[in-house]
Image (cartoon, rainbow, N blue to C red):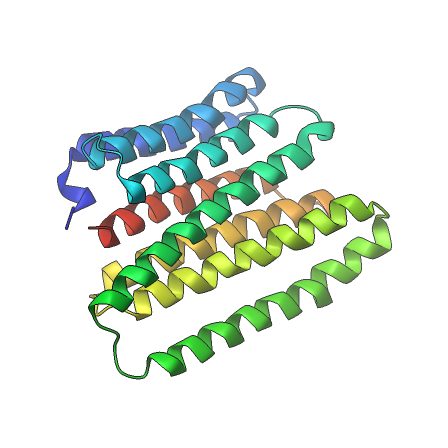
Length: 239
């Protein structure tokens, strides 16, 4: 089992330094620098991932880097005008699909080893959490969006996106519930998914519903932490 904290921790420090530089550029309104620091931060995450797996791209590492690449692509699309927003949404959608493929591979792998007792109850719990997330989305965000916008194409894309993103939260939880893990290893992966959900919720609310104070900074902080925690969590679980 690879321990991501044992592999060149200075590179992990560099990743967080890249995050901090981007957050500072947002806080200080350094517009030109923001266009550089945003994709650079995600490039550092990809570099850290490749270095941590020893630059050996097997199936698990390949899917993980693919998910991160789509995140980088989405970051770049969102740097441009509003007409590229849908392309950014599609890029992040593909990234979440890739993360869920990785979750599926981990579930299949665990099925071949041993499932813990009461797994059926854990599955029921995860499905219930997923339904609650979907209901909350439609009752809160969906109703407000439909009242203020009439773009059916974008609304369909947003619904599909949330379906996959909420599925990521639930599947990461299921993956760790299937394993006997200490708390700090248990929490990393689902926390990353929840932070991704939080980041996109802030982004969508600020963009479509009502302005949020320091929304861009809050989106970027939760997004960066989500990406690095997902990377650490998946590498921890992938053999």
